[in-house]
Image (tube, rainbow, N blue to C red):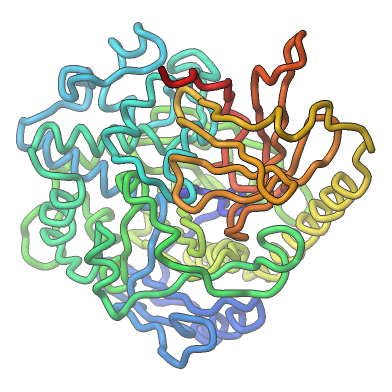
Length: 524
């Protein structure tokens, strides 16, 4: 996930600098927050090395009077990738690594599926989504939670088959940032959590932000996660609070495990705009040379055509650098990144030519408010005519959600009344996927059950759908359901189990389609 960067967080807009945020901006934010139903949010804006806004809106938890303030920390998902890159940049400055070092020289035991890719993969390659892995490949190693260590997750990377050849295509991934975190530990002897906390956050003066669960949960001033869960698909229905301890996969923290406040984000924005220089004191977090590497485009991203009210947001180019997206808006370069973990979304936007940056954090999954407010700020700072972006984008999302809900309801309402081919007892067993590990299929009270062994509390019943396909009904209703299909050999025995998400809106990090389970060998 997002660490996740959901499709609806993708935006194509920017801004240029004027003197201050738009007139009435805070009232506009609060009105939209209430209208859309976002429990809480935090916004930071910096202009020419001045913080012109750092403020919280709403509450930390639905139904609670505890307000969000400028020091309230929000998990920020994949915007944290830039912090992992900063940690690597510091090590480059110290002469301990180089961007083009081979990963295997710095992380013994590292292995990709292809031996040649293993030999050629550089530290830079880890950071730019061109490895050949498919979109979100391996994310079930931490989504929605895991009992695997980071080292074990990185070891299992060798079993994930590529979708394309090395360096030939862009496909967003999280697992290679996990490798980057493990490499930092190999080089420094400190975990990614400790090194990033000490050498990035504390050194930057970001004293409220956290890198690990223990410190995060010790902070009383933290936002709580929310999602819409009761409308038939995740993302539809009423807002409800989630269990925050189920939504932070610590083995993937280098890909997006930070929690950051508006005040701390303001410092980060200034450091980025000033090429690594620290606010006020004349020191540096990382060198200008490292900063230049971070913002240099390396991989082309596809540019989808946009029509109607979104046509003016069509970029001429869209690229990925080291932990940052770099694209244009009406001829002006922007540097940005979106991020999401379940129950939270964030965007960080920089307009280098205007020396302006801003961040928007929310404790829900209503990304339309982030995109809409981005456009309002971006148009303001580019001195473009104001437009009703939040309303336009909300209407667009509503239509997309309703279409997905209709397609989902149609698909599940009329399955073929055929099957299953075997008695339920014949599906029972332990099945193994090379990179994920095992699932157990059992029988209880006249139904099949499923248990994902690498993921705590990811289990439930299997409801027959059609033929030899079943639909998961997870005990944890926040987990995306999957179709589970048993493939039979010529003798009528199960030889494979495949899966795919049920929901058309499922986050790409539920990469069920990448799994291929076969019967596990019987213990001797």
